[in-house]
Image (cartoon, rainbow, N blue to C red; front, side):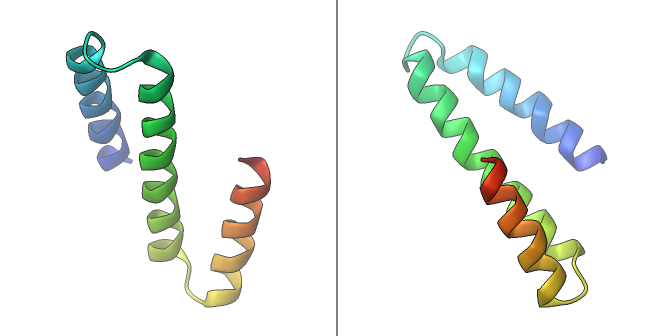
Length: 64
């Protein structure tokens, strides 16, 4: 959980730095992709077998 908190703080800092350079819509889409890849990686790391990973991955995609 500490890693996710660190990632969120880093995300907020980068968003503040890039708010004048990048459009807010593009920045939102960028963070959605980055967070999705981090979450999928976390699912893959935490799941003990591929069946559980597939359930988590498909559920995530349906919500996205």
